[in-house]
Length: 185
Ligand SMILES: [Ca+2]
Ligand SMILES: [Ca+2]
Ligand SMILES: [Ca+2]
Image (cartoon, rainbow, N blue to C red):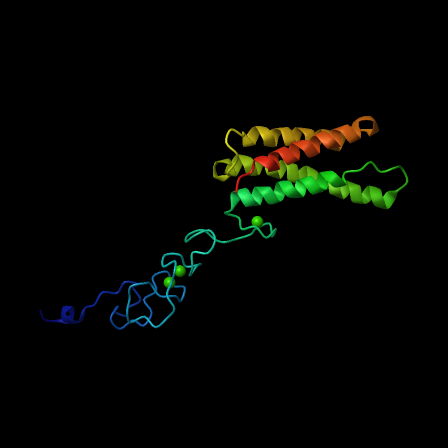
């Protein structure tokens, strides 16, 4: 062989430095080196094709370990995420109260709580629709039916007047804990 081909080297990360001389072959460009390159002096990349990750972490390479709603549960853990949200719904349901007229401060707090509860219930339903396939439940349990029951009874509790409030709140709590109860590990 003659000419420039003689000096041609593989350049796995296409950075213009041949693999044999490249002290950091880094295909995804995150500063961590691809495994299998003995001249690399940079730290090894546990996710060589994911520029945002250098280790598989909780969700694995290619999926961010994000926690969009900031509740401490990584977004890819659908069952845990749903459990956290339904758990929050249970505690909000517990705080539902009928406020006597004139208690303005209490009424304001209750209004905010009710709004949060209502939104959360809707959010749980759409979460189940979006991620149902990735959520583990007890055999035979129908997650979407349980979520729909919970939503229906929660709305009823939110609307309840004095005569039925206690009963409706209890029924809502029961539906929420039933949903919690079927969520798998
Ligand atoms: Ca890399
Ligand atoms: Ca990487
Ligand atoms: Ca989260």
